[in-house]
Image 1 (tube, rainbow, N blue to C red):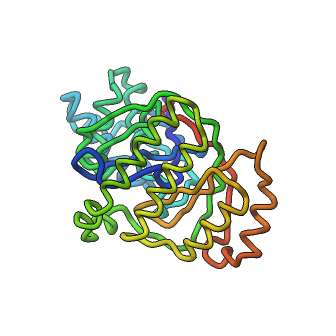
Image 2: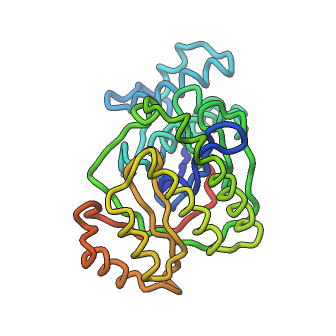
Image 3: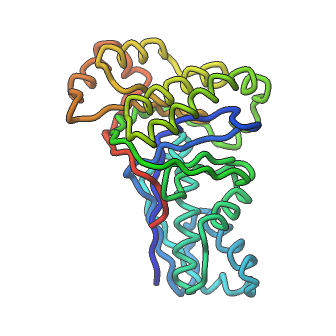
Amino acid sequence: MAQAQCPASCGELIQGWILGSEKLVSCPVDWYSCVEVTSGKPRNDERPLTRAMVRQLLAHWQLPPGLGQTLRIACHSTIPVAKGMASSTADIAATAVATARHLQLPLDVRTLAQLCVALEPTDSTLFPQLTLFDHNTAGTQIHCGGLPQVEVLVLESPLTLTTADYHRLPRRQILQENATALESAWGKLQQACAENNATLLGEAATISAIASQALLPKPAFNTLLRLVERGDLYGLNVAHSGSVVGLLLDSDRHDVEAVRGWLKEMKLLAHWPQNFLLKMVAGGVT
C-alpha cells in the first residue's frame, strides 16, 4: 500500500500568451486530494481519470496491462470539481505517484507532467515550486525561486465549467492581444518570487485577472477590484478556465472578517456564496 497527495489550486496566478504560446502558473493552496493505491480488486466508484493514469503508467513502464486489475485506487478529495481548482490534476498526479510508490518504480516530475498532459490540460500544482507550465504539451517548465507569504480567500461560485469546455472556446486571438500584459505579469511574478514580495505577486495576478476578463469574464469584477483597493489587499487572481476567484492577502496584516463583511455589503455573495481562507503553498506531490 502507498499514498500520495497533491494540492488544489485557486485558479492561476497568471495564465495567457507567454513566450510564444498559452501557459500558466497555478496558485497551489493547502487543500489536497489524497490517493491510496493497494493490491486488490478495483473499486466500482473509481474516478475514470485515475484509472486512465494507471493504464498510462503501466504502458510507460512496459508492464502487462492486466496488472492494473490487481491495483485498487482510493481517492479522498473534497476539492470542488469543474470550478477551476485543479481537482483533476490533483487526483491524477497523486494517483501516479502513489502507484509508483506501491510498485516501487521510478517516476520523476518531468515524466509525471508528460503523463498528466497526455490525459488532459494540466495545472502546475504537481511541481514542488511555482512553475510556468505549458499545460497542453508540458514543453515549458520554468520554475520560480521563492514563495512569498500569501493567503487566499477563495470565493466559490455555484457555476461550473470543465477544462474541456474552456479549451473549446476560440481563444488564440484574444490571448495574443493580451500578450504584452501577460509578459509584464510574468516578469513581476518572477521578481516577486526572487524577492519574496507578496505585493508584486498580487500585482502580477491582478494583471492576468484583468486580461482574463476579455475571454471568460467574472461577474461584478470591478466591484471585486474596489474591494481589493478598499482593504489594501495584495490583489486578486482568478480561475482562467473556471469560476473561482482568490483575494490575495495576509491575515497578520489584513482583517479577514472585515473583508468577509465587505463581500456581503458590496453584494458579492450573490455570485460567490461560499469562501475559504487557505494558505498558498509551493505545490508538489508528497
